[in-house]
Image 1: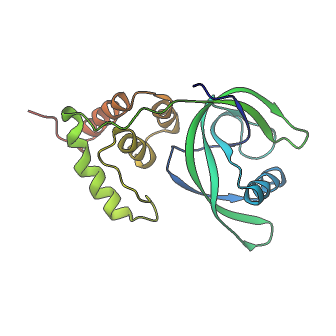
Image 2 (image 1 turned 135 degrees about the vertical axis):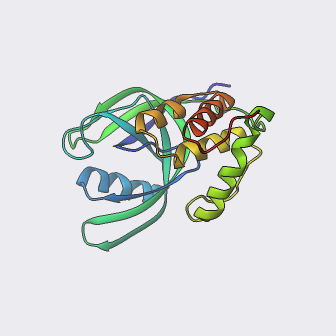
Length: 201
């Protein structure tokens, strides 16, 4: 069954959040401070979108059409007027319609995007796993929390999207892909081009 559209406040950023990633943020603008406080109080999610035009502060930015819902996992205000939070990425969505409030906060009607069912990386993509396993082990569970699902092409592709040093627009394209095997195929080609993976044969 198709889900009904949902309304979410948006937090446009110069970064891409993927499902199950943890992202630390520093919040100081009044509109986002109020939004985050409401989300902490209610436990509700908000949407993180890559900025296509504009800045994180000042006038409302133009967000990418596809983003990821996020929920506050940790928060602290050690310094007055600055809220330190860690958010967890949850589900991808497409912005159907967005409107700026008087305070500049964007609120959007979003449609949830389907995620593929769990499927193991194909034999042709299995050589991407040892490198990711090493990176995850080195980063630790605080950076890349468990469960670690190396048998799930979707999880593997999202973790590479999260950690690879590639332009944000490239990360956005990977986020937008519905096919996890296609996502991982593109990532594998990048790893080979950068000499991080040897081609088969």
